[in-house]
Image (cartoon, rainbow, N blue to C red; front, side, top):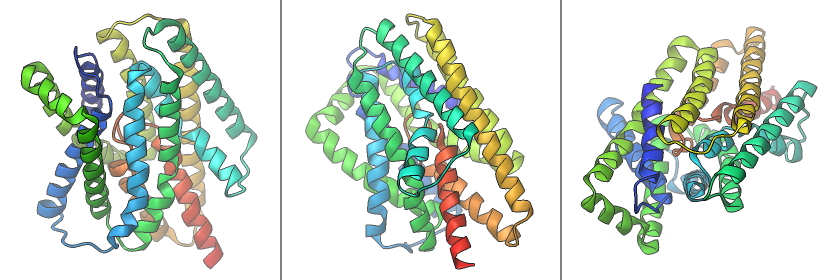
Length: 342
């Protein structure tokens, strides 16, 4: 949580630097860090070479990651950081919508109650931001909501690449390389890239923040995966929820802003609902696994999906914020496909 806390602190600190008006560059810097670190890990530690999946197979996933990263960071120009963190956590809502409208899936009463609580919490948070933030604009909520929808599509793209035989690191490296190329070209022509470089040259503090920010995200993700592997899903979910709460507290402590009790009520509803939803799904998966005839192979498939999701998910507000529900959607697809084959 220390590295995630540092990551989130730096993200808001950079946004508060005078003259920094390039929210999309936060995503570009993170993609750069993940690209470099994952390439080094793949080349020198895993010693993987070549590519299994054809290059065109990565374009769909790249589009999702690009949309998620860019829209999420652009939203910071119009809403404050805690509001972005809370909205980015709520992939449960689009996941349920996609499951209902596209896959015809039905959810339990408790799941609908959790979704209602999360939605109400988001409304409270948005209302507090609208009342207290001088830079608030509805377009910020639109951008961050669209980024969440882009993230919720990721499990299907991931599943397709895994079925082609790609490893976690292969997908991470090539997806982020493609995303970095597109973001570099677009930010160069928009002026954001050169504006950020000029600011870093003229402001040493900004340059230091950016350098640390570029490198810390991948370290934070790696530590989180260590928690998942060593202590299990429940501990990981509790840690992720605590991290989100810590992020919001840090934001109010180190970057003072107008306070409203709606922030507290909204946070409790959103994080409480997501925590209950995640723990319920983990409990359900354990029950399913205990009666599964596929045993180890089934568990390994789920672990691979979680590990991949963790290292390729939305870069901006930490790649794991609210990602568990999106992962569950991918797992459901795998289980359904296995059921059809059986």
